[in-house]
Length: 572
Image 1 (cartoon, rainbow, N blue to C red):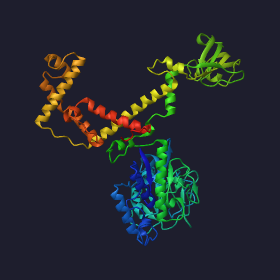
Image 2 (cartoon, rainbow, N blue to C red):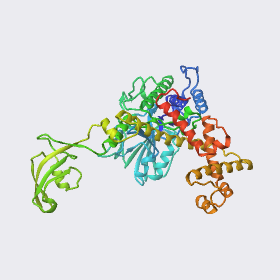
Image 3 (cartoon, helix red, strand yellow):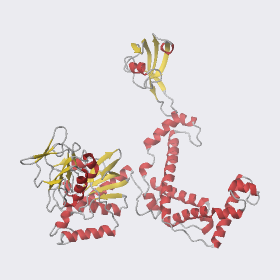
């Protein structure tokens, strides 16, 4: 999961990436490492701030230097679909899914407008993704409308799969060829078919096909993101570069005129800041995959607050803990109809055994008694007499009473009945639960981060003296543990007892066999002390005992909690 996904690598995408990198966000950037062909082809650019009268190539070079200096990576994959899934977006490219809480669209505009029928048949024989849908047309006849020489590798991929390919290149100097490829140097006029795309029509002829691939540098926003609002063929945005979809922003030429590099860069910055506000307001954070936390503040900033319990979650836990499934039965008023979940009291006659009973009570919708009878009683009222056939039995059902379950209102008395130490009312119980749940989540998250911190810590060098110290420390530590738990130190244990407890017969064998385990503990503490700039005293003693890792982790938790609650100790 990423914080943000940027789609497009023109000036708007570059600006958004620079802003997110400067703010330390975990984002993925889909585009071309060549940035924008439109920028590269520009002869002179006279109105870009700070760069007077530069060529497109010079501006591109300046972009590249800045991107490289900030160590920003571009993922060269074609995005063919973006879908809203609960609280995030799933970005589809080359049959892979990438998830992000927010997206910034900087896709630019394409001079090739959709041909009639193209948008109507998307997903019905018309595709924008060779990798995603190519295998559906193995051995079949397809048409490929391609707008760029840079996409010829996708033409070759499709030609290897299809039986027959009609290639319609909308660019010059075509280099792709093959025995099954027929090139048509005409502009297609329309896509036609019954329930799916079946024919690609030209001015004076048409070709019958099983599928049509539209290979373009930029896909129409309405195709890329389902449900996005457009205005005049561009993505509709407000002053914050926000679209009509939550967490979805757009910048640059795709939002409309003027088509200016300066305007695009400015909107990219605005869109990035709007995405940052959206993440903060919803508590969305992910751990950055590159650039590990180096200070307590950075570690705190890496916490994904969306994983921490909110008030609604706390209320559900309280309700479950305090009511323990208890509920009150409230009789329905005359004329009110039964629904699944209601408790019905009834009699059944006309059968035998379980089908000849007085004053049965059951909860509708559970199927415990007989699903046919239960389903028949849904929508009925108290006093109704029903005729029901179950198998060969013709039964008569009389409904006596219908009650609806009502969960009791939580009270301070319910809290007192739980006998929780120092808790006597709902508010105190809510705070206790919040404390427990938050601590558990933070322990989990900080444990993950600590593991990351350890990955790049070099192994310390150990000489004989150091190993001897470790051995004595380890003996001292386990002496204390065994004295408390077994009532004996290592010296007081027999060889048999030591072998049973430790797998060895002497103290010397024990320490030699455990050095590697002890070194891992030291490495954990070294990782924390170096990365979090916490000074550890008594180099070997403090670093090499169980408490070191726990104490440091407690320190992390303490500071993070202060940050979450806005406490004064944040970052101290």
